[in-house]
Length: 227
Image (cartoon, rainbow, N blue to C red):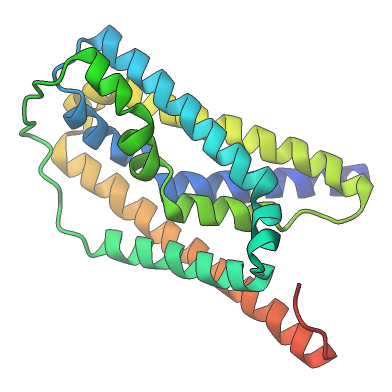
């Protein structure tokens, strides 16, 4: 029984982490982050990366833990959120698959100073660049899948917190090492990573849609309106 519960939480972590990691795509976005911070030194860029990661962590926590309450306030049902969120995720993955390769070799020099870029850490570097609508919708959909019983709720909260920490860690690492990765991967390597993430993102979006449709179908079959 213990092994079953442990494997379930590991599965929940892997699903949550892979979904958020794929839709955020921090290592793909790191080249955009580098372009926005080209006028900074390595130490200044690291400080901006830390601030963006902290903001992203807050956005993820709010979406994962308070997302369902926000939905209830606006009268949005969970299946509707899952279907809509899945559509956003799948559409994002589809557009990434068919997007033209971004030129990473030429970076426009930034004339903005450190304080100016620091003020941009939340908007637009965190929202919508890093944790955009697709990320928020995915996090809320993951949060609504928690067990309703107390025995399962507490471990699920821990898993969600660990997922947020892990995703935030990858965001900070990707942005902190953006200049090094640009030299290491180059344009072709970045394109490969982005395409693989896009395909995974498309699959995850379809799965979220399927889960929402199945829940609606079950509610219709039982004659109960979905909550």
